Image 1 (spheres, rainbow, N blue to C red):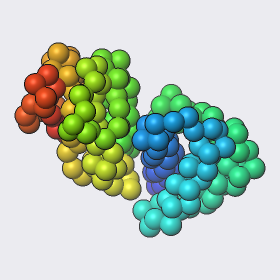
Image 2: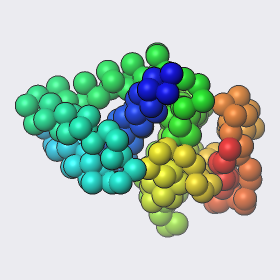
Image 3: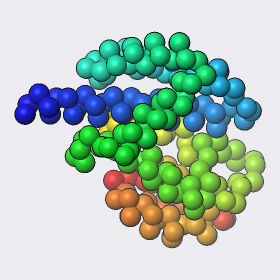
Image 4: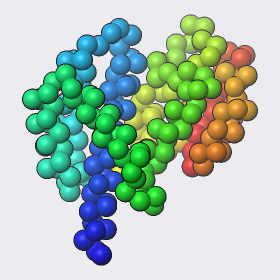
Length: 196
């Protein structure tokens, strides 16, 4: 029994590594403002995994990460697709409900919020007009909001259209998150904080 519990914890940690890796890739893509070809995307994934392998929190899944890196080097163009497949597998067959991380739950929330208004990790420029149907996340704030185990350690700041505020609050509640209003931004947007 104890051994199967250890196995479940390692599986959950491995899925968190994959989730963090994919989130890092998507944020890099959002910031680049130009098309990133598949081979460059694979390089971004490999770079993040090499960094993750050095973290003490991932020590128990170091060999699994090493295997992903090996696969990524051999299958450059199919690497992202394989990670998406692993991520989908973790969503279809969760290790157990108690071990699902805040980061995984937040990823699910972002998918739901994206249906309300397009989610963007682009930096907000005070001099630019905020696009009406976008929800903005601060990349640095988002990266620092989760620890290596995927647990939320600080609130996540968002800027979203005021017309979508109530719907976003309902969606957050439906996913067991809280969205509170901090202030307004450029008259038609609301600055909020997402937390558990």
